[in-house]
Image (cartoon, rainbow, N blue to C red; front, side):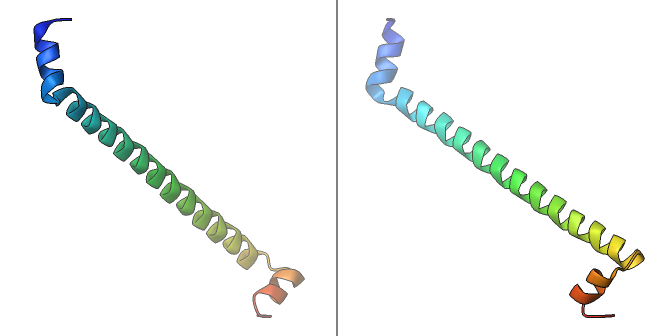
Length: 70
């Protein structure tokens, strides 16, 4: 082991760097989960809108019953 590495370890710089990199990795993971959640929610709202537009164009007895009978 070289002298510089042991001096840095004695001063606690290695653990500070490791904590920083760990925090950055955790932040990146959290942002990925948020991005995935927003994407899935947007896709879900898009699907609901798509199927509602299909029912408006081609109403059936069941769709008239579920939408209030218009």
